[in-house]
Image (cartoon, rainbow, N blue to C red; front, side):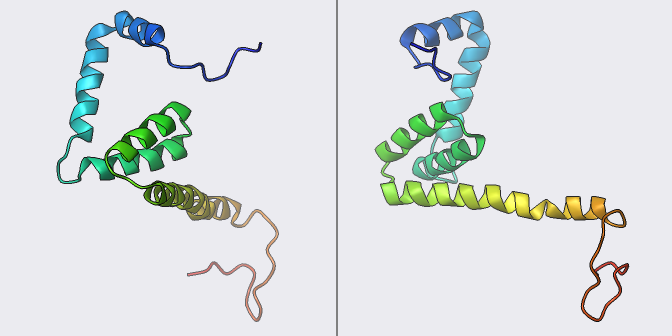
Length: 125
């Protein structure tokens, strides 16, 4: 059997990870508890944000864990899917928004087709 790209998180692996850097591990756990605690945003909303971010960062561990926690905190499957669609739009939107960088870099270098009734060398305002 091939070695999986994403191994299952076992108790042994989790304990070993904590043993390798216990102070940092404990600090991270405390940070995580604080971040996801009810505050200006309720925990359910924070978990839905985490589901969306996990899809953008493409972390299968985070997708699985935050989806399960969101459900336990009262999120519906429809809310989870809507959060995922927000993530998809943001990721696609970022590529679209950043296209101006490529267009700016190409300015004056690439072949331009003249705008109807306009000058090919004129930059849009």
